[in-house]
Length: 309
Image 1: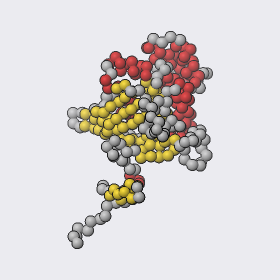
Image 2: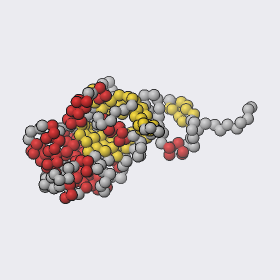
Image 3: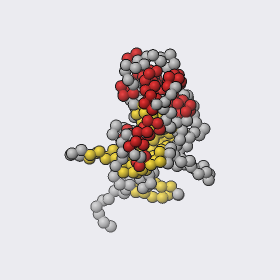
Image 4: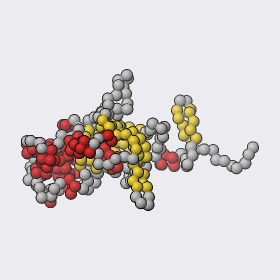
């Protein structure tokens, strides 16, 4: 298992994360209103990790992906990519970053593929824009890796939804990125195809040593990734971390869960607790925090009677 760089084993110094976001704030302003998409979000992603980011619509997960990809800027906070401050990049440096360091896979295949080009030609486009040589050979290699060696000449209308997304993954890998970002890549395919696509992302990470970040609303992604971070109200609320030794992601044995769920305490000491747990404990609005036998215990406050003794 690829562990979080925040965790240490013994006295080992944690490796520098590939992606480190600290206290990210993003506010969208219009003439009439302000919408807060991120509210002090912290996240760390290790090099070579395959991570899922889940959350309901409006939770801020796609905003986070756009910021990591250099497509948007936060209102406040820090974004470090392999130790480099992304927010200090010049315009030409950002163009180079988006072209070489990071690859993208979008939910909408019309955004991924040029419809009148074949699969083989589509994969060569980003390499041509970068001025790479041996484009045809590399495109064939990538399409073979995603299982499309027999569909090289297929155009958009001739490919199934799953095949289109596999071509999109090959396009995202074309310029040898260190990070691959996918925004709802399984949103328009059935469950079987979705699981197959997630296997392709894992294989790409293993084959090329890249960091993969997949944004989705589907919690089933946990079976296919190293770690899942849940975002709620613009902050990280919990993590699902693959157990060690890991359970085979392809197996569904019905036994012990393959992941352990952990709540996330941010640097300000804030902890998001799932609403279902608060409801079960009868907690509303305020909470008593106590230490009992070395454990932090949350309790519903004693009801006030309005009388004094």
